[in-house]
Length: 197
Image (cartoon, rainbow, N blue to C red; front, side):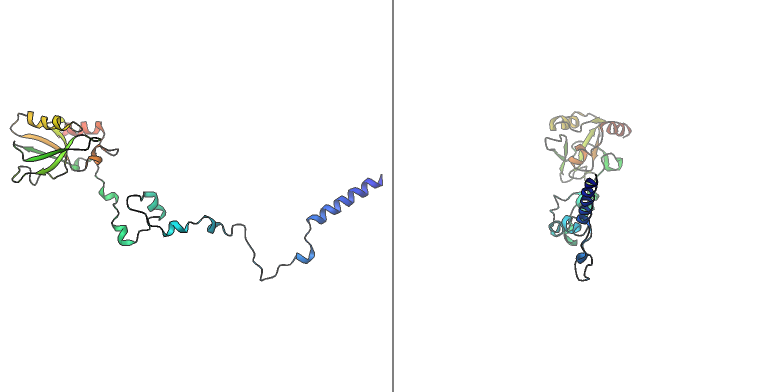
């Protein structure tokens, strides 16, 4: 029975020596490099290519600006459009209401097909709308009737068919994407707003 104990003791001593540090390697010289657990992680995950790249203004996103990836130099950065270009289509101060006699001297043009509706392309010389309307204004309503998103013929027909001495026009002072796009006025808000004008 003593032989199994001797074999066990020999295995135990052999396994302990397998995990022990040899005495010749136990001291580290002061000139050797000591690596920490996270050394090199910053280098592995940094992106020097991004730090040196310049994004086109059309491709830059708010996330790029937030992370500082919009690395256009100062003067180039100033040319990038900002949120200051946004026109809130659910703010009454961005609408113009005018009452004009016919002929008005306004040249209307149809928006792109995806938006519909018409806008003021230009004002004829001596127009009654000079100083009141601007090229680019979106026609929203004629005499209280909503014409936004109607075809050119239907929207212009509402002006022609109006028999009152002065035709009341409500226009949005902004672009078609700002009025008809995803940030455009909701139909409920527009209905309430037109009821108050």
